[in-house]
Length: 254
Image (cartoon, rainbow, N blue to C red; front, side):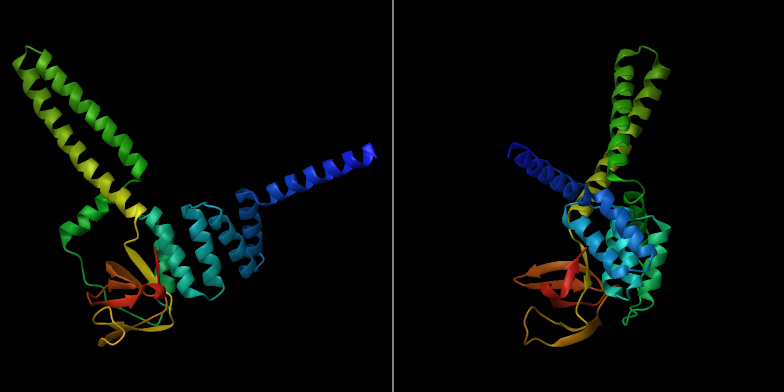
């Protein structure tokens, strides 16, 4: 009897250990990649979604899931996960190219209004580095600024004092810009500012009311910017500058 009980205990332990290994994100990712490479895209999608459901996220994970959806001819889901990947890696050329490809297959071809040059430059600065890299650079800039100010105070040489003072001030100004950029980058990562339409065809309203006027139509896969929220309605803007209201259930925030 004791041997039988021990065998049951060992079998139970082994079963739970096997399940734990099978649920491991690395194991699931390997299985998903294998399914994708053998053109079993629905299976790959399910495995990648399982990794995300367990609380994991990364540029590669979202990008690979976008690829699987694209191969499975689900373009709205594909562009959604490509955009989530781009949010984490805004300068990744592969992601940008794939978004252009999938957008070319969507119904809506919305002309983009060019951004003002200073807004475009600032966005490029904010997206130049990851939040962690910006944090490290800001610490270095602040340390250098404080060291130079300390040198200014301690030195009796006029030339050294002038150079250390103005260089220290310059580093402090760069640190201030870095803090603003890091703050905006962190806010962008932690909040949903854009969304993808997930309804095949939707009438955009002039106000958050079903009885309000239809002002334009959007189709599945179109990217919108989120402006305001009233109850279960979301105010949006599309890339040509047009603004309207859509039900929150008809979009997925990025």
